[in-house]
Image (cartoon, rainbow, N blue to C red; front, side, top):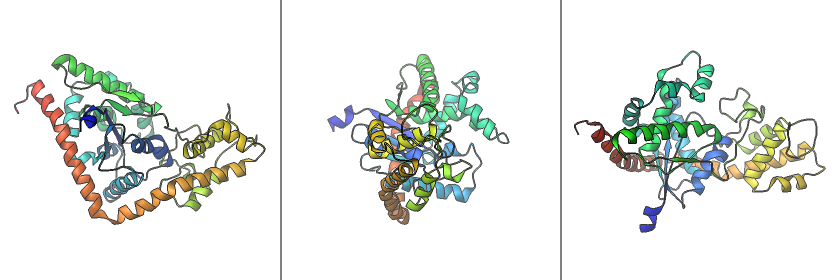
Length: 333
C-alpha cells in the first residue's frame, strides 16, 4: 500500500455523446489503459458536459451505457482504476458553481472552443457552453490530480484550470493541487479520412470520414478504401500529403511500426495496398474490443455494479476537497 500512495494521480474524462471513435481510442482511451499500473487513475464519463448540445433523452441514456461498456471493453480495470459517471457525483456541479464565481468573464470569452462551438451551434449559444471550462476545472481539481492527459487542442483548458486554482489558493491558502497537462507519448492525433485537415469526429457529415470503435470489419475496410490520399501514389510522410500522413499515423499507432519502416515496406506499392493494410490492422486491433463490448453490454447488472462502486469512491474522494472549499469560503457546514 505504501507504493500505492506514492503514485501520482491522473484524472481524465470523455463525453458519451454517441459512439467512441478510433480517434478517441488512439488519442485518449488507449492511454487510459496503459497508465493504470503507473498512476492512480480516476476516469469519468463526462455526461454533464454533453448537455451544452440538446440531447434526446432515450438516446442519451443509451449512449451513456454504451460508452461505459465500450471504454471498459478497451481494457479499463475497475480493480485498478476508478471509472465513474460524472452526473452521479454531485460534487462536480457544486464545485463548478463555486469556481464560476472565481473565474473571470474575459477568461471564458477567450476560450477558442467556445468560439468554435458557438459557430457550430449558432441556434443554441447557451451559458453552459460558455462556462464549460469551469466544469472541466472542477472535474480535475476535485481529485487533486497531479496530471491530466490532454491532446494539443485541450491545452487551453488546462491553462484556465491552473489559473482558477492558483487564484483560489492565492485567496484561501493551499486548497487545490495545481495540475500539469501532459501529452502522452503514444497519443495519436487522428484526422478525418475524408477531410484530413480536420480531427476525426463522430459529427463528421461524411460517414466515411469517421471510424467507430464498434464498426464491423467490412465497414472499417470500406471506409479506409475510400480514404482521401493524393495523386502521387507514393507512401511517404511529407508536406501536402495530409491524407497519406494521417493513414501512416494510424498504421504506426496500431502496429507500432516507425514511419521509416512503413515507407520501406510500401516502397513501390500503390495506395490501394496501403489502404487495405491500414484497414486490416485497424479491424484486427478493434476486434477484441468489439467482442468484449458485446459481452459487457448484455450484462447490465455487472455494468451497474461497476459504475455504482466507482461513483461511491469518486464521491468519497471529491467530498474531501468540496468540504475544504466550502469551509475556506465561510459556508456553515
